[in-house]
Image 1 (cartoon, rainbow, N blue to C red):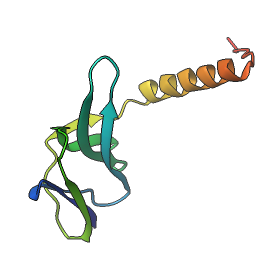
Image 2: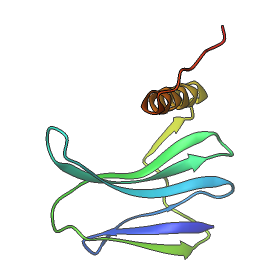
Image 3: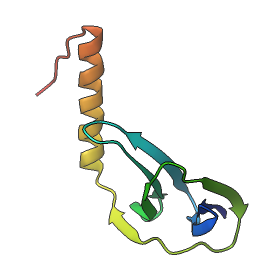
Length: 113
């Protein structure tokens, strides 16, 4: 399987990987709304089990160095978090995005009952 070997300041945090059909991601965020903060999230979606998984949710500081190696391995670390996929939340999120874009474009949405 394809895995992400994730390092923070030369220390290995995890080997993330999901066997079979999946989504695997490593995201670095910086948010400066109200207070500045950065974090690293390594997770994914196991489409076979229909669940979200997460290996890392780590706060970052200025000067931190992140390295991700993409490696083929037969095994990965176990995720530290698992939670079921909630399609109703996904649908509501899509609706919210469509409404926001429609508003920005000056469009009117007519919803059916």
